[in-house]
Picture 1 (cartoon, rainbow, N blue to C red):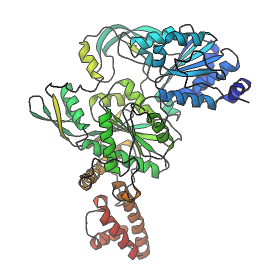
Picture 2: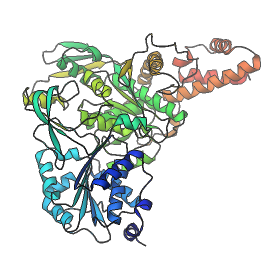
Picture 3: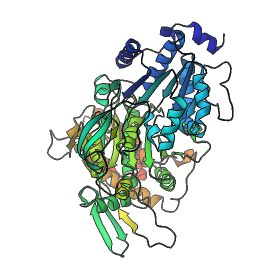
Picture 4: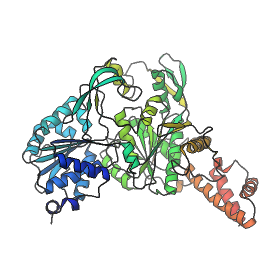
Length: 602
């Protein structure tokens, strides 16, 4: 029996996946009301796809609709939706183009993109009205990405039988881009509409979207549907040269004016400085800990501002960790395959620009490094959403980010529920507002350069957990970490957020030493990046040194037990026999020599 026929014969209960409480509640509300339009706002990672396909399966089984059309933002998500639908007995064609007229026989619908709909809206209108159709508008806020997309979606699906709108971030700040098929109500506004510490100053009467069902991050966290997120903020001093040739220095966390803050932020993200490799090292340390404590396939994502930075960051990952990163760029024809390979593979880190910031499902990704100058609430929520999807109750997510006010404001507001805001007219010049959401413009040919990065260092600033900052100074009991114990404890596991901050602060100097050593060892081959690094590179990465330290610690325990001496005495004897710095900052050669010395003592 074909999958299309199978979907018609199975009952809704057998085609549906086990439902979470919020999904069942939303379905019950939908079936009670049987509306033409229904907007679901659910936090990224909560399971909007499962909810939508379960609803589609029920409507198909009851013959209330005969076709399903899914509209999503990207081509990669088309395949993701088609695969998920097939698993539930619904056959959706992800390859149907505008050059093909009718929906292919043997399918129950198709998956398209907003851009494709904008190309031929009347074609999609004909497909969605020839039979009763459920149109699922995934991440419907994209229908506000310029009037052409919104108008095309309304033209294409305005006459469809049913429309289900899904979003995890139903808000925009432009007052002229109403999202179609969304209900708005008047509301009064005062102050910062953007909500990111750098948004629109506006007052008066505007419009706010009203969802039919809302399931926020706070509720999902209480239900163990998503992982708790801890934000590790890193400050540092940036130095750059301005257009007058003057050298300016400023701290990320104390930059003063918005202009200075942006320049300090840009300088920190420059691949030639030390801020980026330092944070990548901390990120890799976190991944190692997760893999050793119950999440063996844990992975991390690095978000870059542009493709040039992404390529440079991938080289830094190779230098700092000894392993190649998965580089995922939008102009790469293999980008979708690389995402799939990363999602199901064992690679530790992927570097991208915007390819996996929205909708893409990579459940094993639990660490995010924010190395981009984008700072809109929409992009922030969607990007953080890539690392919050929970697979077991004890998993957690960590986001490493610059300690700048716009990002810290967004992190502190993670648990707030947001609606799509259409504020009153702007009280600031349009040019200034537009600049807030985009990376600073590079000078045109022949134009004087306004900024030149010189250097930037990195220092741990604080941990932000549940909207509260913990610096690790004088917060809670002291954290004692025995020599050789390199486990990165408790975010939020064994330690409180305050204790975690204290431990991060103590480890910060160690990371700096490792990065400096890595830079010296790889100064000549810094530009070399390999997709598949050779196995004989083992020992060049500081992560391999960490493995040696753990082995030394176990051997010290065995020697101490055999000789009835305290472990501290064995450590002292070991350093006398093999001189050098403490294990936390010792080189790979010293660690190997100490390991061999311990073996002779057994």
